Image (cartoon, rainbow, N blue to C red; front, side):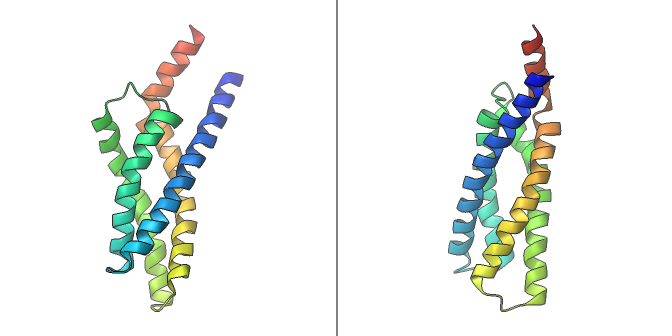
Length: 144
């Protein structure tokens, strides 16, 4: 069991580092795309790009699931994406309802805060569902 705790800690640290880079990239893409589109479409654009990169980085580095087919991981990742997009877009929609003229810095602050909330759920779902089989195989290998 101690090895499992160390593995979870390693996964959390790696996931956090990848997530931090992803949120920074998402924020930059969001700010750039907000020049020509509304907040929900800008969020969708920035999140699609970042999710593809983020999921692949987590497949390789966080969960070390190179045995999983890339297409399957990304298909399952779409389900996770929908929940994450709902959290971040919901937060932006609430902000727009409360203050339709909210400054861009406030939109990005809300986006980052909701991304942090979504990230907690994303880690749990990726670990428990998308990369579950790889963890089981890793456990079998460590006990051999």
